[in-house]
View 1: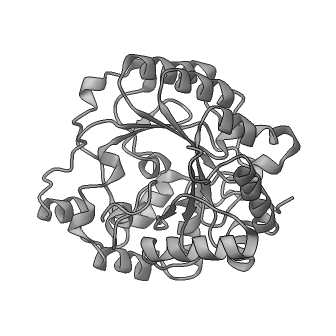
View 2: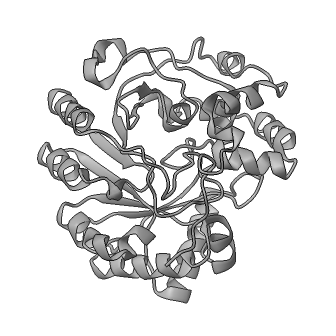
Length: 344
């Protein structure tokens, strides 16, 4: 099975604290992101609707990827309580939010994962499982591919590269080979195969301090190479910019790339990417029930005043988005979100 390494928290690293991360980012002289988006006509940047309820079930994971903005890993104990999970489901039942995006950590490790999927699907919602692939190779979770297929859950699977070297460098030794076996099994069930309705999308992010390449070109290349090398097919490839948060922030500091990376993000600011920012159509729920504009704000502990246990939707639909220097990661180049680029 894949090798794992300690999380920032386990190592008692200063960047395990969201406060410390924000202080590091605040010390870098950058233009104000709020002023940048105001220049693009968004004064202030506001949510336009809630189309996606993104639920983070916790920080437990079977992997400890070098770029992880969650600092997730096997040694993280944080998981969503039954009370908060029930509140999420009640909220869904009462509101017309079309998509439930389940993430973590490895969300499948949560004991309530199956119930969440089953009840969200029973409500007629599109359900996305952000799967690290190797979780399906663990004996207790081998049921997952068939379970997800039975409930027509969209699988968004992370894979840094279609080659072993880059993938294992970022995610740990042995991850690539296990991921390939997992993808082949998903294909056997019909995932990624035209006409089945079972959607398999892949996510890639750079293995280093640079921006992703062109998503359309990379998708073409990935489809060709994964088919040729391993017989694997999939629907779409999402390219995501690494955010200067948590373990990727640690990498930027230790490699002395932090200031140059932030400058790269700022110089690549694209006003056209603002319209599609995921924070404008997403409500992010933390494992403890706190609410956020997005998963990145969640990891920097930039919580909204409301809590899932006393949520008032009307206060949230047109809320002003909280921003910081890290937000330049979502507007660089073609834009970046959990669904890939935000332009084109």
